[in-house]
Image (cartoon, rainbow, N blue to C red; front, side):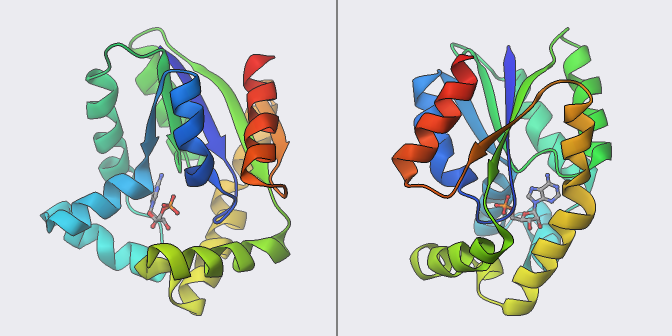
Length: 189
Ligand code: AMP
């Protein structure tokens, strides 16, 4: 199995890009945010716990997120691999991912970062709020906290994956098609 990571700040367009990329490369798109929102919608106890954290823009516990992913990894069939979106979000999650994949002698192939300037983040989130109605896109304070959490906890992953020679950047400022082509060029290298 091949494991690709779509990386980038909130609002960079990871979710928007993932569908077409997953189809093109026969990958299963796994968004930890979407999996958590499905748990919330289904009213599970995991969803109830996660909702409080998500609504404030804080990260959900590693065990919860990693448990959801590992059960999906185990169900893989008929695919080339996985396209992870929203995971890992911390160095400790990245280390746990390496340990999980080592069990099946797999590894992360590439980390593709969709780069947009900070000024665009708030604009993109506001646009998405109008379309998708996500609770965590509605409050300015929550958005600010998610951006701060990204800088403090997630951005250090750039150096982590650069050191492994796996980190690549795509310009996220263009149209959906332009960004798709930029990511495809990286995938095809
Ligand atoms: P996203 O859809 O990726 O923007 O995620 C929405 C929210 O879900 C985040 O702000 C976090 O509260 C939570 N979440 C998603 N992925 C993770 C993760 N890998 N670790 C912890 N929390 C996560």
